[in-house]
Length: 138
Image (tube, rainbow, N blue to C red; front, top):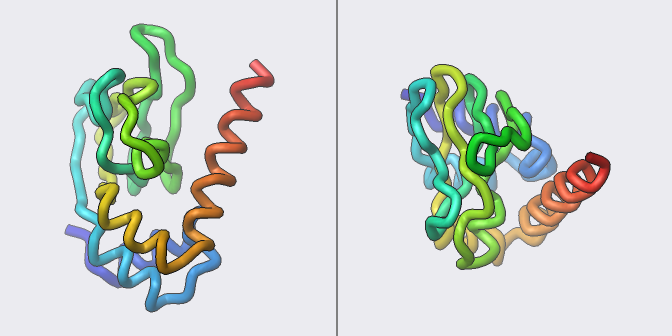
């Protein structure tokens, strides 16, 4: 089990949260639930309603549509961030590619924090923009 201090240090190392002071990171760490997944375990299923985002603590995940891999993501990367912004079905599936530990942050808790800290909302938008640009290059 990851301690609050370890979660804060991890969150500080992620672009999305890097500019936030420690007390704000502690608030996020409090709501972040640790989740373990084995290779092949579904984390996000395309078409299902999303209610959380995931931060990869350890391991790798595969983002895919059906059998087509869109990208592999690893430590300190975020998946499912669109779900904290809207209530639409998931746009792709995410499956553990290796033994993986993640932090899960639910939509309602995350929205409460975004309302208090606009930098977090800006970080989510930046992450989505970067992913869209990368997808357009392919």
